[in-house]
Length: 290
Image (cartoon, rainbow, N blue to C red; front, side):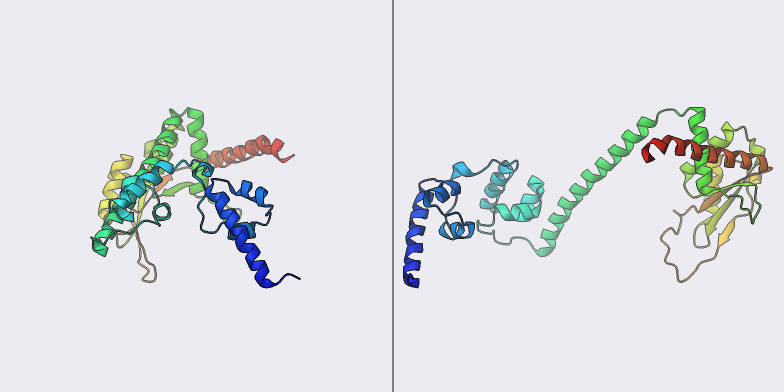
């Protein structure tokens, strides 16, 4: 059996050979094959502290940014400043310049935080721009609605948000409630398409007591373009002290209920049309389920 000291001496001799080969510019694989060391742990120990030759380094998409980050650090820039300048993540910058001396702190913690906030706000502005671009593209792709498309959209909209008849509670009437002005506009355009006279439409504002009820009434009346006589008495919802509400104050417009007088026949047509959509969708999807 070999003495432990002999093993240590053998390792040191092997390490000297490995280091010499590394400094000659050989790669890990070439050193492994030259020394017949196929255990990665042992190879790591033999080459510990020896940087790889330049020719073995793979090009990276961020190499230019890394070089620039190191230049800025040598000029005394902080991580925050480099991040704002290059738009890179702080973790990447920290990794790229970790072996370089850190600059002396020239700003207070508050000033450094303000710089970081500006960088973050710039990122948020870019993200907001991307979000808005996606929405604009989708909006423009819709184009003009055909009467059939508007009809189908109105049926689906009503079935999602309108009142419905129940076997245990016969309510064949048309009442639609929503807080989104765009949804209300689409629903009214749908009623126009169906030839529902404006004289048959009644409106009711539904709003919380902490909001501006009079302002909401004016807002909805202007939106729908209806005479004040078409509006029923506003429904005021009492405040629950256990509920924390955010939609309060002047910005809260509540909901608008739209009711069609003598709407039983219209309701039956809506329900029938909706189930026609369901059957058509089911048939269209059948090949995907077989």
